[in-house]
Amino acid sequence: MSEEQILRELSEILEEDMDYESGRILGSMCTKPHPLAVKVFQRTIEKNLGDPLLFPGALKIEREVIRMLGTLLHNPDAHGNIVTGGTEANIMAIRAARNMSGKKHGKIIVPESAHVSFDKAAELMGLKIIRVPLTEEYIVDLDKLNEYIDRETIAIVGIAGTTGLGVVDPIDKMAEIATDSKVYLHVDAAFGGLVLPFLEMLGYKVPIWDFRAEGVMSITVDPHKMGMAPIPAGGILFRSEEIMKHLYIKVPYLAGGAVNHATIVGTRSGASVIATWALFKHLGIKGYMEVIRRCMKLTEFLASEIERTPGAQLVRKPIMNIVGIKFDSADPGIVDRKLRERGWALGNFGSFLRVVIMPHIRKEHLVEFVGDLREILENL
Ligand SMILES: Cc1ncc(COP(=O)(O)O)c(C=O)c1O
Image 1 (tube, rainbow, N blue to C red):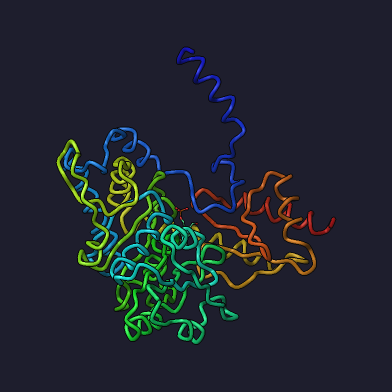
Image 2: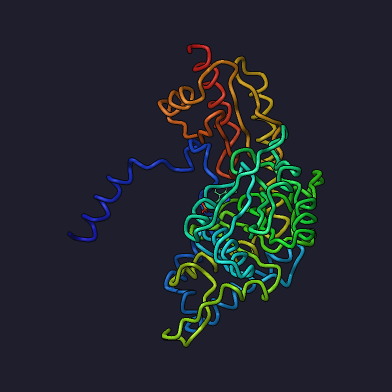
């Protein structure tokens, strides 16, 4: 096939895909990458950070990205990698905890609200996973957590920005528990890690959740979510290199020379790391504060519209740009299906539907969405 034919066929096939620009993707934590990131990504597409000594410049940039993220999360000495996503980051954290513990078997304790990546981590490493019930506030129940910790426990996990509702577990209290029980504490801030620091700067009340809480050993924070970086750009930060060293496996044969890999994957995108660097430098603290300010304004708008929608309710007042919607009598599965028939894509969490107010969403999208939702609920 000629290049022209291929491009034509591709655009026909990809016609089926949804796009962020339409404003119809309301339930994803991803967004359209920032144009500067796209430009930088295209220019640096051949960089492979799996063979970093071939690309020392790219490696330097990855270290700078980690330093910038570490500084934002109050630990400029953090070590880590930009990886394929929050899933790989969480798997790396659990692997570090498992290796540090010296135990082959054991268990990890996560809140009921934890992302499925912890199930993947547990299955891959043959660990038991215990899910702790949540309180009425949808945060981890600390008393139950305390009860579950025993000699088999390899790690406990707190979430700063849960997948379903964006709530933040009491990380400072969890850090005390972890320190007292001598277990590893990992914080999954895959989404919230690039929201909470800016909310705090904007004057919102934000509890201590990052490296300021001693006892936090590692944090997941993904640039390809609220950072607007191109996929794949997840992030894992360890409090120190001492912790990260537990992951090192030597790769001797590389063209650039032998290195230690901490990541699960070998060959990995340098372009997304460099694009992330470019965005951090370009937008800076002020730029991201503005993005978050705008997303929160729209979140507050949607929340108030939901409160004024007969038959619908907020699951809880939003903490960040995530809105959980539940229904008085309607089945969320049916509402979800009806919304899909009208072209909307939300997240279905069983008892509620989730909207994530990402940077691609504008007020007119939300006005249209609320109109459709009200019509659906009236006609059920
Ligand atoms: C809290 C949290 N952790 C981890 C992940 C996994 O991230 P990824 O899909 O980039 O692997 C998600 C994804 O939504 C998430 O919400």
